[in-house]
Each structure stands twice: as C-alpha cells, then as structure tokens.
Image 1 (cartoon, helix red, strand yellow):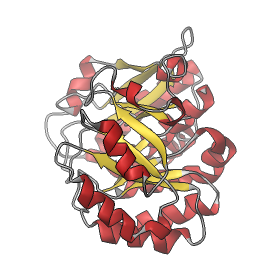
Image 2 (cartoon, one colour):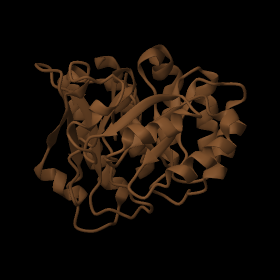
Image 3 (cartoon, one colour):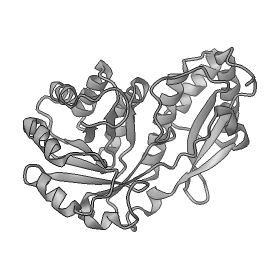
Image 4 (cartoon, one colour):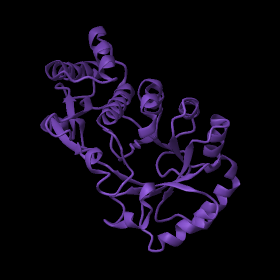
Length: 313
C-alpha cells in the first residue's frame, strides 16, 4: 500500500485529479493519497469528488500544520459537500506536540457523521500513546497509524497494530538553491517499496519528489530544476534525476531556463527509454516550445513519482 503525502496546493491537487482515472483507478487496491489542505479552494473539493466518484480510498487531514487553511470546520464542510454518501476514506489527524486531545476529540464528535474512520499521522512521541488512542477509539475506528519516522523514536511503531501501520519519511535530497542541483545530477531516494513489509509495515508514504519542506509563496528562481524519479535497473531502488538550466545568473527568461532543463530531460529519456504518464506531457512541451509555468513542473514531477511507485509495487 502506497500513501503519497500531498500538500494541497493547486497544482498538486490537479496532479492527483489527473492521475485518478489513468493511474489510481487501475491500482485502487494499493494506493491511498493523504491530502493535507493548505488553502480553502474549489480545487480541493473537486479533487475529493474525483477520488470519491472513482472509489479511490484517501485521507484528508483536518488539522493541517502548514499553509493558511487552519479552519477545521471549513475543512469538514469541504469534505461533507464533496463526498455525498461515499464512505471509503479517512479523516486525518496530525498528532503534534501541542495537540489538545480532549479538544480534538470534541471537534471530531461534532462531525461524526462524516468520519468513517481516522488516520493518525504521528509527528510526535507520546509516552501514554496507548491511552491516547483508546480515548479516540471510544468514538471512532482508527484505520491507519502513519508513523513519521523523522519525528518519532526508532521503535515507536511497535505501539500499534501491524495492520494499521504506514511508515512516512522525507527521502527527497533538497538543496538550498535550484542551481545547486547542477552539482548533484541525481540523488538516492528510497527503497521502502521493496522492504516495508518485512520491516513490519502495512504500507509506506513519502513526500514524493517535492520534499517535506513547505513554502507558502513562490518566487522567480535563478535556475529551473525538473526533478524526475526513476527506478535503478539493477536494484529497483528509486532515484531522482535533477535536470537544471545553465543560464542561471539572474531571474530573467524563465521560459528559456525551462527549455534548457527540458532539453536535458528529453535527451535522458531518449537515451534510457524511460517513460511515464508525465513524460508524454514533457515531450509535448518540448515539441511545441511551450513553457507551462513552474506549477505545472511540480505537478508533472508528482504525477511521474506516483506512477513510478505504483508500477514498482
């Protein structure tokens, strides 16, 4: 089971929506996106509707820790107005150091009719976690415990039933500036899709080829970088290629920088034969000399990553 962790920005949500029929639906038994909303938008609602209408299991976090969308009531309203009678989803609750569990349970109880089950994202360690979970389970079923490995102790996952366990970590090797990827070329990502079962997990989750770090506002970059996940032929380990522009002295001509990075991506795909649902779009942009905007690059990177992982499992 793969549970890609998506911050609910516009282009990330559009990417999930565009993946639903061609990629998620044929793999519905082994995928369940986690969406942490960051903005109140119609795109969030249409994405939930698309997943629900195609019977794709998903989780929507109702206490997001990044972005400007902090209104739990508004998030529940977005969910309830989008799912109709659909019940194959989870309400996500992030356990962080500042959470007031009694208050959280009280809010959840107000919306019990639209909570088929919970998915708990463990971003902190609680010594009394068994008692904490029991207090939630008095009112709701817990379907998944998503263990953020970078925020919990090594053996924390042993507190939970195995058939609920999902491991989460950030495997993206982020650099300070896009131009820094010129020196990296490619980086290791993960091999969790190979070993998660023997390590005691029901599934695994990652922040895709985007990374956990969240930025609310975009800015004009000096360099354009396209991050493309692929599987190493000999080992099936996931790596990420970084295709970067060369004319990086200032922020002018972003379209030209994109063309430079795209030339490198197309040449690599031609050389290796790599293909995914995103590559046809990149080829179309290359043939037409079209710059779709930086948000579309992130969308296609997300789509490529999910498509790849589902092919590997």
